[in-house]
Amino acid sequence: MTSLYRLAGLSAALLLSAGVYAGDIQIGEAWARASAPGRDSANVYLSVTGKQPATLVGASSPASASVELRTMTHKGGTMKTHTIGSVDLPANQRIDMASEHGPHLTLVGLKSPLKAGKTVLLTLNVEMPGKRGIKVDVRAEIRPLKN
Image 1 (cartoon, rainbow, N blue to C red):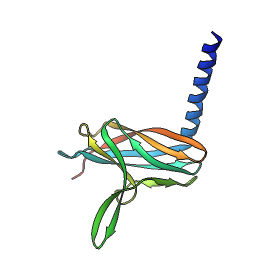
Image 2 (image 1 turned 45 degrees about the vertical axis):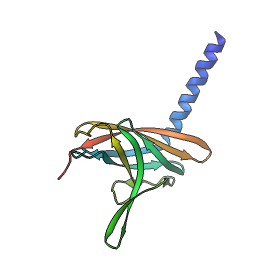
Image 3 (image 1 turned 90 degrees about the horizontal axis):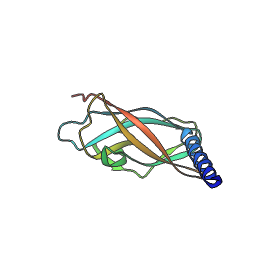
Image 4 (image 1 turned 60 degrees about the horizontal axis):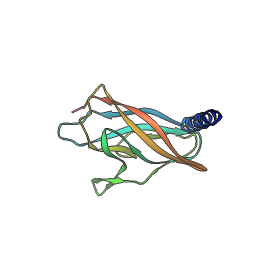
């Protein structure tokens, strides 16, 4: 019986420590537009603030086959989308991922259309110096598609 209590205590300690690390990362105003008919991808926008330096290294969502970190470049009057490996999150600095022209998340291979008034779940993968990877769950509001 003592072993069972020790295991329960260890499990609780691990869960609490994971919550503390996730608490170091604050996500603000996560949202996406409803997906247009025939589209199998959608951008998700949000802001991220960390109490410590960190790096956003990826994300996942049950709503899509994959989630990519992307940005756009403008060259010679042409815009081109690029997949990026990570986004640096300096300590105590808000990083706005609120436009397709800067870093943002893209749901690729949507399993069903995103509908206004619903939410989409994302899990952000964040690395912090001296700590294992941290998972941060986020619910993004789905806003109406604007023409």
